[in-house]
Length: 460
Image 1 (spheres, rainbow, N blue to C red):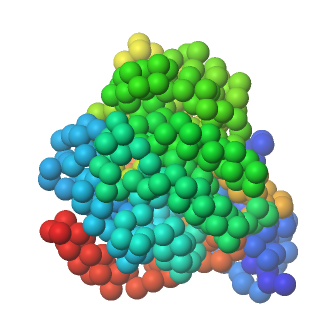
Image 2 (cartoon, one colour; image 1 turned 180 degrees about the vertical axis):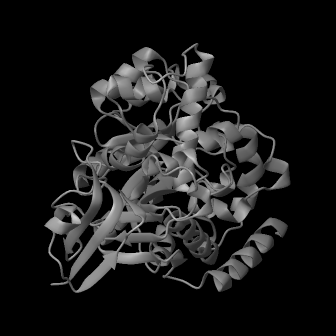
C-alpha cells in the first residue's frame, strides 16, 4: 500500500457537488485513490511521498473528449490551411493513406505529451483509418510510457467515394474486418473497472464515411460488451446537406433512426443543431465533445454550448485533431470555449455583466473540462477531487510573470490570463509531469523523430 500526501495548496479546487475551493488545501491518497480531502491541518501529516504545493492552484485533471493523435504529423499543411471541413479532408486523406504503424506510435506520443503538459489526465482519441498494417494496438502501446488514462476509439470508414462517400477507397475498410477487429480490441484491452487506465470505444467516423448498417452493427456490438459509442455529428452545413440528400434525414434524426442515441453515446462538434435536437440530446442523455478551436479554424460555426448546458446535456471539451487546431493544449481549449461562448452571447445581444446568465464564466469552463468530460466519457471515478475517486490532479505555480497582479482570484487567473503548462500532473497518484518536465519520454529526442516522420509523410 503506497500513500501520497499533497499539502498547502494555495487553493484546492475540488469540483465536487458543492464546488468547494479549499484554501491551504490538500489530499491524502492511497494506491491511486483519494482517501481524504480538506485543509492541510486536517490531513495526516506523513505519507510515503509528501508534495508541498505552497503557492500552487490544484485542480482535478482535465479530460479531453475528442482528438485525432495521428494528425500531429500534418499540422499547418499549406494546401489545407484555408479550407472548410470537406475540402480539408479531401486534401489530407491521400497523405494520411501513407501512414505506417511507426507513424501512429510517434504521433500518439506527441499528442499525449502536449496534453499532459497542458493539464490533461484522461484523453479520448478517435483513430479511424488504419493504412499499411496500422492498428489501434500501435496507439495503445505507444501511450503507456506517457502515463495518461486513454479512451482509445476504434474508428472506421467503410463508405468510399465509389459508394457515394467522401473518403477515397484507399482509406476505407470492409465492414466485416471492422467489426471483427472491434470485438478483438474490446476483449483484449477494455477495462470496465473503477480506476481503469484503458477503455475501448467503438467509433464509426461520420455519416459521410460509413454505412447505416455499420452504425447499427457497431451499436449492437458496443452494447453487448457495455462500451461507449462515439462519432462526428452535425459539424458543418455540408454534412447536413449530405445527410438530407443521401438519407432523407438531418444528422440527429439520422442517428435516431440507427439507434445511435443514449447515455452510452457522445458526438463530436454538434455545431448545427436546433432546439428540438438539443432536447433530443437531453432526453436521450447523449453527450457532446465541444471543439471550439477546430470549429473556428475550419469555419464550421459556433456550437450552442450554453443552450446545451441549460438543457442538461453533458458537454466536455475536445482539442480535436492536431491538423485542425493545430495543437493539443487542453487548458487553452477550455479558455477558447469560454471566450467563444461569450462572443456568441454578445452576437445575440447579451450584455457583459455579472448578472447575465448568458455570460459563460471561468468556473463553468473549468467544470466542462473536468466534471463535464467525465460525464461525457461515462466515468464516475474521475472529474473531481473527492473521497473514493481517482487521484488525478494538476497544479499550477502562481509565482510566475503570467499571473502577476492576478492573484485576487487565482483560479480565474488560470483562464483569464494566457494559459501556460502545468507544473505538476499526477494520474492515479503517479507523476506524469513534475516541476514542469514530462517524465515519460525524452522530448528532445522525440521531437526530432516526429519531425523526421512528418517530413517523410508529407513528401511521400
